[in-house]
Structures are given as C-alpha cells and as structure tokens.
Length: 113
Length: 109
Image (tube, rainbow over all chains, first blue to last red; front, top):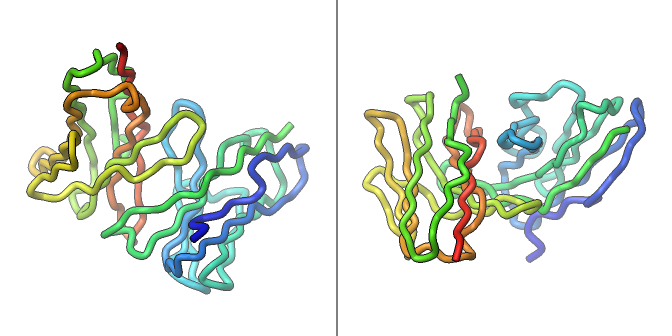
C-alpha cells in the first residue's frame, strides 16, 4: 500500500509559470484535500473533494484549480505562480474525515522566484 | 478569530515529566476532533481521535470539553522522541477539517 503519493517533492518556479502538483491515493478514499503550510501558520485548506466529480473551495482557493476525474487522483494546478504561493503543499485523503481524520502525503516544497 | 487556536509554545519539558496543553475551537457544531503530530519538515500524522468521554492511548490522554469548547492533550512520562509540533484539528461544516497552528513541544534530557 503506497498510501498518498505526491509528486514532485521539490519544485522551483518562476513567477507567472504554471504547473500541476500531483496527488494519488490507492486506498479507495472518497475524501481528498489540498492544504498549504507556511512558517508560523497552520495548515490552510485550499480545495477539497468528497468524491469523483465533486470539488469545492477551501479557505485559500485563489490562484489554484483542482479536478477530480477519478477516485484515486486529485491534482492541484497553479495557474500563474506568484511568490506568495511559496509554501509546502500537502495532499490528504480519508475514508471518512469525521471518523478517521486524514492521511497525508509527504508534501511538495514549492518555491516561486 | 481563528476557528482553531493553540498556544504555539514551545513547551520545554524535562524527560520523564508530564506536559499538557489545550486547543480552543470556535465552531460549536463541530463533532469530530483529532490530535496530529508533525515532525520538522514532515507530513502531519494522526496521533489520536478525541472522543466526548475522553480517551487514552498509552502515555497520551485527550479530553474534550464541549461547554468551554476546548480539547486537551496530556503526555505522561515524556520521551525525547515526543519532541514535535502537535496540531489540533476540528471538523468544520461540510466534512472539512480545520487545523490549529500547532503547539511545539521540546523534551530535554
């Protein structure tokens, strides 16, 4: 069982570039989310999904897009990278967030210069 | 006001001592609560769920106080390996989980 797999682990982007952070889980979890974590701050929810074809915005969605075409994959797209998007991004999944909380991927460290 | 608030610490704890810290939440409708542990530059990992009646897992005890809207975590017989940041989590509307900023614990010999 691979759990939640995020790629890449590290990325440097130039301002204005776009990219997709990949997230895949092999646990057949319906719930998936993307969080960002900045120094001195907790994890902030970007987007989340309660199943294939269903996504919704979290606390800080601006500048990011998501889609959920399959249960397994939940990619996060940065449309036009800005230095304010320099952060650590975590993808998480759950069978039931209410009952089991989230299992997290190992994170993607993104620097926008 | 943040939905979930924690004392950032650090709590400096002698090895073998007991440490306890709280977390307050603002959404009175929250039904589910968790404690996560996060080591430096690593992903958060679930430590334990928090049940209404309180629950214990080895040296760790979690309590929920709905009237005052806080949860607590107590660590007994602290080990050096307990040094980490502890994240409090409350369920928000729509099955979303809201994280606190974390409480840093440093266990020293």
